Amino acid sequence: MGNDKTNMFVAIALSLAVLLGWNYFVAAPMNERQKQAAAQNQAAQAPGSAPVATPSPQEGGPSAPAAGTIPGAAQAPAPREEAVARSARLRIDTPALFGSVALKGGRIDDVLLKNYHETVSDESPRIVLLSPAGSQNPYYAEFGWVSSDAGKLPNADTVWKADAEVLSPGKPVTLSWDNGEGLTFKRILAVDDKFMFTVRDEVDNTGSKAVTLYPYSLVSRWGKPQTQGYYVLHEGLIGALGADGLQEYTYDKIGKEPSFGGPNTRGKSWDGVTGGFVGITDKYWAAAVIPDQDKPFNGAFTERSEGAAKVYQTSVRGEAVTVAPGTSSSATQRLFAGAKEVNQINGYQKDLGIKQFDLMIDWGWFWFLTKPMFKALDFFFHLLGNFGVAILLVTLILKIFFLPIANRSYVSMAKMKAVQPEMTSIRERYKDDKMKQQQAMMELYKKEKINPVAGCWPVLIQIPVFFALYKVLFITIEMRHAPFFGWIQDLAAPDPTSLLNLFGLLPFAAPDFIHLGVWPLIMGVTMFIQMKMNPAPPDPVQAQIFTFMPIIFTFMLGSFPAGLVIYWAWNNTLSVLQQYVIMRRNGVKVELWDNLKGTFSKKPPEKGAAAKG
Image (cartoon, rainbow, N blue to C red; front, side, top):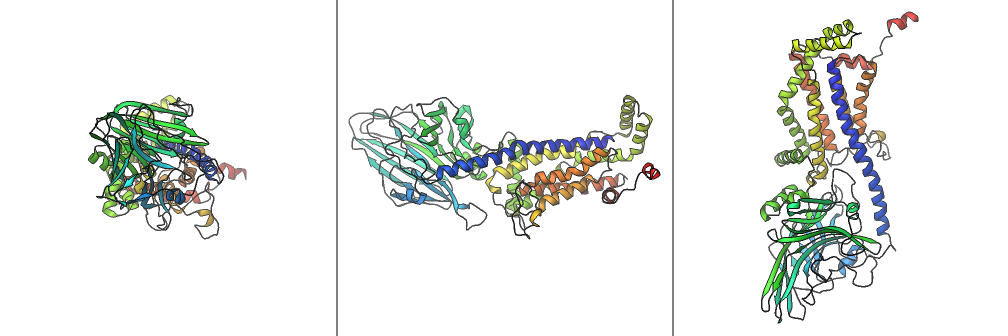
């Protein structure tokens, strides 16, 4: 087999290795984890399951990051609406959010996203982000003070008084509570038109002695949620903690940390850091508390057991605030609760000075590829109004950008085809001496100015682009439910059609493990045509590998996001056109039609076989 075939075979083998590794280490574990998580989630929510306790902040030494405890008898989990109705509430109403703040406890524990639904249909339920204690899946944010010498402090049983009924952008609301011992607490809540709450806690000391208080904030999630299970996506506890930088703990990993402040609690803490945030992230949504960026704080990630439930918590505790008699002090913190929209996250980092807040989105180790890829797609989306068209245009621009490299590659391949007779002659002449055969080949390459590895570049260049686009399609919420044309209503999901039920004509659902939609088939055809642009390898085994390679890729990419499959099909099409033009310009015969005819026509028997007959 000629060196041009070898180069192409190596390049395709590399691509196949990437995809096979991706499928083995990502897709298969994901399916298994989703099944296990679904079973656990169903068991946790089943009627009559283990009771869910109502948590409250710990009134103790300031060294503790305000972990929750059980204040009294456990309550059986109630439907979310019932749990919300158990407390008087301050209503939240913004262009992006609606929900409420519990006046009993002062927690932000009822948040739904107005502009995001569970499916592509606007009639489907909106995304529920936060839910109150006592519901089936408590998930909330809490703010307050801890101290060892201040007497009664606000806790989960404190009933606050609000000076308004609705919290909306530009209309902050003040909550107040008097502990009856000389301290009056106020909490001024504000919210913007997207996903950021500002919480300013004030304390007035009308007593006779000074008190020392520590502000805290936390995000608490009860029960292990169902996760995607992908290695390329972090879901769980997350934070950026000053010089320690990004910290990520999955729900399983945090439970393996050493004991933390008690026999049923495990975790990790960071002391005296400045700048950053801590929170809990899902694939598209997150809740995170953000301390004062200019003052040192302690941060902690914990997992604890409350009966049969696991409680996952991220918390921060600020530096000490001393309030002398007749004076007041305050502490300002923030809560992000919403969708991880890229531009909004970046805007918060820039406008509010939240250090490393962009790390809330899991760009991965190859952020230098994924971030520019998203920016390009987002730019053309706002210009054209369709992410699918943006993918096509960005692919075309990348083709133009890499045109010099690809041209040299295809020119070298064309030259190798032109000297194919000489290469065949060399093989025949030195068929028993591989060393001389190789030396003669290298002399021929040098004479004709041929780069024998040039054929690898078109495919090798495609691999990082493939990865960057996959990552962008997978992690960014902008791609979620982004339509293309026709039946593709979600570029981040697989092509919903299936060959097995004739693309919906037969009345049954095709199994997931054999998913061949229209676009994967188009991709397979374009890949087949691209491979047929070159002469068939003389080795029958290698020829069979080349023939079945498009089929293998078609099945493998069948369950990949539709946007990625569209990119691959479009890239193949552009590569075929580019190779065709370059081969014609170099006077090399394009063997596409001959190869296609040879593939689908019955080959005549060999002369030896005919003589025997």
